[in-house]
Length: 359
Image (cartoon, rainbow, N blue to C red; front, side, top):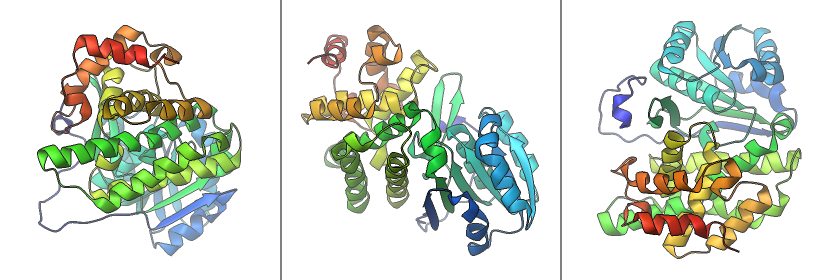
């Protein structure tokens, strides 16, 4: 399904200027929630906010953020237990008349806040409670449909406040998925460079350099990513923010989304709610790196060290479904040329999936 068919983003008036939107304030560290009022004052966001969160994340961090901001302004709370066109519409109504939006939670909460703020021409502040993917800092928002998730262009947060104590207390699976999402930048860049050579697609060298550096840092320091450690949370969150900035510089998700992401979206459709986004991207990255002739074993070992899955079986998906996802990948965003669009047959797809288990 094309993103153009998902009518949750307001259409913007065309102009010929190109904007590069980046987060202005990024605060990452222990017990930094207390700095949120100062961040909002520094950016002159206003005195009224809609706080979007989930029930669990409201307990973990949302209540604290609400209390901190309520001392100097008006804060209304909207609970988003899912992300859907209906929830987005309801959140927009709740945000009407508010000065800005603040998202406190995981991916669906941050993406809901991102779309609502974009549609209402308001700024939004990202307060992640887990570091599971680079959506905490990017201009992309993922919306589920009956045929799988669709990635939409919105805008990045004006500020990110990430408390490493809160992020470190989240299940390690989420942190490992965030690592895998960043590591997938490796093959996203290779696909982008290939599209530049073969299709003449424009490419940003600066965005490529930043995205590659971010992935390299995690691969080389995989042994430092441990469960329930703030240093690990700090490390991964910084990498996710850098990945989001690379996309803002490029003006697209190209620096962080290639064939491995198309494979991930295909798995979402064929085996919904089995693998986290970053997990399936990590598996797709191993395959993509093999096809590009790179060090796929090194990528696989880094993912294993971090605690991310490296085979379909690791996330409870059959090899047969993984094969179908590889064959389906080229139909996902066909305008985005990747290594998965170049002659993968059923026989080769079966061999690629078996390669994941090879020692």
